[in-house]
Each structure stands twice: as C-alpha cells, then as structure tokens.
Length: 87
Image (cartoon, rainbow, N blue to C red; front, side, top):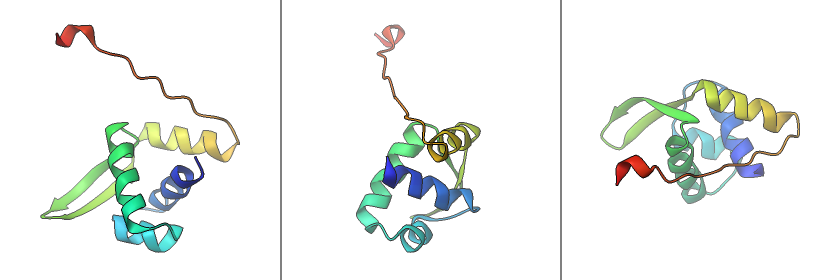
C-alpha cells in the first residue's frame, strides 16, 4: 500500500504524467507505470490528456477518497466480483 499511497499523493499535487511521479516518489519507472494501469482500471485515476504515448492523469473522486483513507492509516480492501450479466 505504501507505493500506491506515494503515487496517489504525487497525482494529488495536480495533473501529472508517469515521469513526474517517478521523480516525486523515487519509485522505479516500471513500477509506476504498472501502478498507473492498476489505478486507472480501479477508477482511482483518469486520463485527462493523451497524445501518442504521452498521457496526463488526475485523481478521480474515488481516488481522493482512497488517498484520504490511506493518509488516516485505514486499510483498504478491494473485492472483485464476476458480473454474471456478461455471460
């Protein structure tokens, strides 16, 4: 969770690209890029600009709520459910 919190804190500072988060967090680029994919799939961040491989992201409302909970020391549990309507 520490890495997720670092990335969300970096994104909270404004509209950022993964490279800026690497500089802020000190995490390896590959780890930041992987976290961006996960956070976007979980709807915690969203793309606000995309041109080629350059993307800029911001926190969603859900992302702000999760970051707030992490900053308070709460634990986050994620449940994944299979949507039976897709079959």
